[in-house]
Length: 119
Image (cartoon, rainbow, N blue to C red; front, side, top):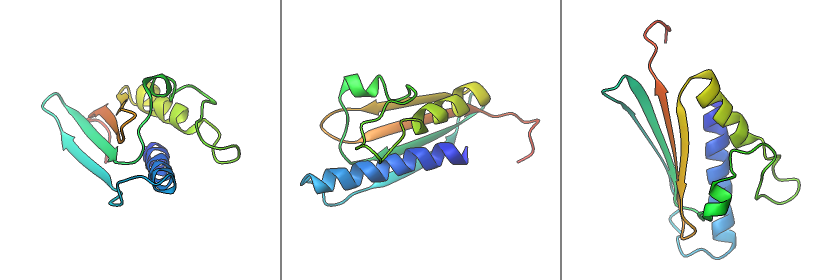
C-alpha cells in the first residue's frame, strides 16, 4: 500500500506544480488525506488535491498501463496502473478517481478489513 500512496501523492504534487506553473489561480495548493473505517468492515482513504483536474477522456484512461499525461522523461505511465492492481487485485478493494477539468482530483481507496491479518 505504500506504493499506492506514493504514486497518488506524487501525481498530486506534480499536478499542483503544473497548475501553478501554468498560472493557476489557486496559490493555496493542498493535498488532503482523510481516512475512516466504515460500517461494512472496510477502510476508506480519500486523497484530494486542488491542482489541475483532468478531462473525462483522460480520467477514463489513467489506470491503463503506459498511459501518461506527463512530459517525456517525467513519468512511465505505470504508477496508477500498478496502484490499481495492488488495491483491486491484491487487496480486493476499489480505487476510483473523481475529477473535472476545472480542477482538483479525488482518489478514493476502499479496502476490506481482514481481521485475520496482524497490523
